[in-house]
Structure formats: C-alpha cells, structure tokens
Image (cartoon, rainbow, N blue to C red; front, side, top):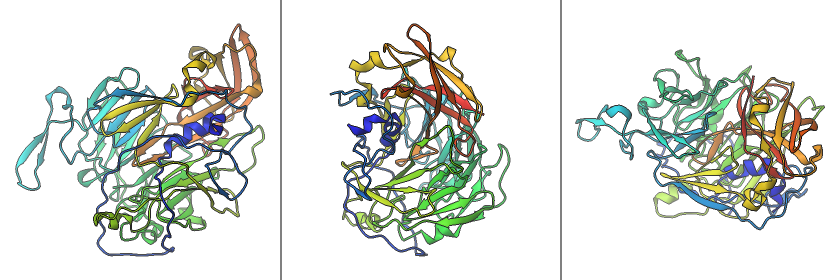
Length: 525
C-alpha cells in the first residue's frame, strides 16, 4: 500500500470520511435564497476504511495521492488491520469527540432528547419543561462522558446548555473549549479542564450570535474564531472566560453560499501558514485576514456539487513539511472530499436517495495561481466520527458502540521493530524555533537520520465527519545519536511560529522506516 510510506498521511487520511458517489453540477457563486430553510438531520453511520493510493503528477488522478514520497518506504506487511469492540455502551452518544492531553476522550450529545444510558453523577437531575404537554419534568441522564482510552472506564459529566451540533477545540493549556449548540446552548461557551474530577463550566450568554452548526478554529495566538452557524451569517472571536461578546462581525460570504438546504453549515476553516484563514462554504472558498477582518482572496469555485452540511463532505489540511531553511511562505494544501448534489436533502425527504460525490479535491492555498486538482476516491464512506489515539489505533464511534481499528502499519508481527519513546528522558515542553531532544528505543541494529521521521499532530474536535483544528507537521531533524545499547536520541527543531503551529498540546510520534512509536504529549509555548 503506497500510503503506508507516510505515517503523516495515514494519520490524516482516516479522518476523511468520504461518501461513494457520482459527480454532479453545483450552483454558481452569489446565490441567495431567503425561503424557509429545512431542518438538517443527524449524521449517518460510519463505515471506516482508510483511503489509499499512489502519487501522480497529473491534474486528474485515479487514486488519492501522497503529498510526499521522500521518506523511506514502510516494511511489507500482509496485515489488513484489526477491529476490536472496545466498549458496547459509551453511556452517551458520541456526536462530538475530542481527545484530551490526559488520554481521556470527551464525548457528548444533544440534551434535547433527555435520554442516554448513564445517569448524572451524585443522583442529580436537571429540571426542564416538556414542550408538548407543558409539564415540569426532570432529566436525570448524563449527555456527556469522559472515556478512558486504556481502561474503557466512563465518567458521566453534567452539561446543561444544549450542545447539539456545537463546535469545540483544545486551548493552549489543554482545556477543552466548547461553543454554541441549540436553543439554550446556542450562545454558550463551555469549559472542561483535564483533571480527575473536573466537570463542565458554562457561560450561556458569552457569544453574540447563535452558533448552531458553526466551526471553531484556532488562531496563531491560541485563541479561537467561530465562523457561521445556522442563519448566522457572521463570525466572532471566543471571548476570555467569563466575558461576553456584544456583537459579531458580519460575513456576507456565508449568506451568498446558502441555498434552500443551506449546504454551508459547519464551514471548513483552516489556518494557513500566512496567518489567514481558508474558509470553504458550499462550493466557494476565500482567505480571511483575522487582523483586518477582510477577505484578501477568493479561490476558484469547486464544481461538482455542495460540500458542507447537510451535503456533508469533509476537509483537512494536508501535512506540513518543515525544512532547515523554510521559505517565507511555507506551502500548504487543503483537501475537500465528497459531498452531495445541492438538492440531495430535498430529494431525500421525498424518498429519492441520490448518490453522493466521489471526487477528492486538493488546493495549494499558498499558491498565487491556485487551482483545484480533482482525484477519485477508491471506495465508499459515510459520515461518522473517528479519532487517532496515542498508540496509533483509530477510535471509531458509531452511536454508542466504541471500536478500535489497528491499521496495517500496526501489524503485530512488526511490533518488535516499532520505536518506543522514552518519555522520562525526552523534552515535552517546546519553544518556537528551538531545538529539543527525544530519546527512543529501537531493536534495529542500525538507526540513521534518513530513516527517522518526527511528526507532531494536533488532536482535533470531530463531529459530523469534520475534524476541526486538525494539523500535522513533519519536523526538522538535526541529528540522531546513539545514547546506549538500543537507545537513541533524535534532536529536532520545534515549529518556527504560532502561525505554523498554534500554541498548545500535540501528539509527537517517532517513525522509523514507516513504523510509528506510541505518541507522546508535548506542549508548544
């Protein structure tokens, strides 16, 4: 499998949850529809299976191509991967997920349905009024849990403002910051710190606009921007804890990209290496300068159909490779895959289920002459949630079943060849542009610099098949030294600035000849 040549690609690709399809035509830019909008429904069931393929230099490809072929090839393996049912009941549905720096996964669902399979802690109940009968009732169920990825132990959490179809991300100190939701949660900012007994802390009036189906992205200074939301054609910056925004910034681009079935909810937002935000909605994309709050560029329209919820394509920033001497503007590519015909949601309400889009499209957003390059996905996917774990496994969430998938590069027969990071002897606190060292064990007789790759991965917030703040960087290796016996030290240069890698926690991997170590948490300050 050619994709096995890069751990970086394998880490990123499983998060693209594509849908098998035939291409179709999309609407033109500037379309404005002010008719009554239909209510999008919840996501479907995931059928996980990593995308694979080989590189090509042409503009149209048969398979998804690796962005980098310079690293040594992975060892051959006949292992096709392994599924494991890790937990048959997560307690609360995993509509939203994020792994925390303490190796716990936060999962939560809407509170509107007042049901789960795990009670609130300490016998607590939350009063609510039934909309149909008007009766005063009690909700004693937990709609958020903390899940231990090693033991499968579940700790119930108490969330009050409804986080249905909300957004989130990790702050620089490792605190989970969730934003928006539905009804009483639509203007809420909620915090969850990674400690043994921490619970949600909520501020229900923190945001200026309603943020239902909005996207949350990190800035170079570690703060957050919130873009869009249902009928919210604006963006705003998440205020400091305890503060509230008085007004949002109007963003006509979101109004222009809304059609009858919207198809621009959960817009794709990526921080570019020039400090601007790439924002994709429906089939159009722009570059937004967060310093001046102006659009500095519009990219070519991506034809073929709609890409955002409820059309529900997916997007990611491809791995960023750093060099000893980086160019003034480090090249970066965005990928947008799948989606549906603009009227697919309308047709589905009438029992006409059209096929979704099969194309996968990449755009080098730092290129002044950027053009979309189309490729074809090899197999079908549906929208779902998936997380990368520190040991390289993929955590698959389908409703309340939690499964682990060990990809081919985790072949048990190759386990003896996998490097092992010596956490106690490695530096976990990184400074921008400074060298740091990571020690690791290897059973290989010879370990040379050319066979080693060091990556850092920002764990994303994932919902509706889209992973916000996903970012992977291949770092610059200074040298590799033998410490003693099978122990080695690789000296690495941290990313140059917060524009390239916003401050916060990352999972660091040492990859030897295509075989990854378990990840080690590091923090960039």
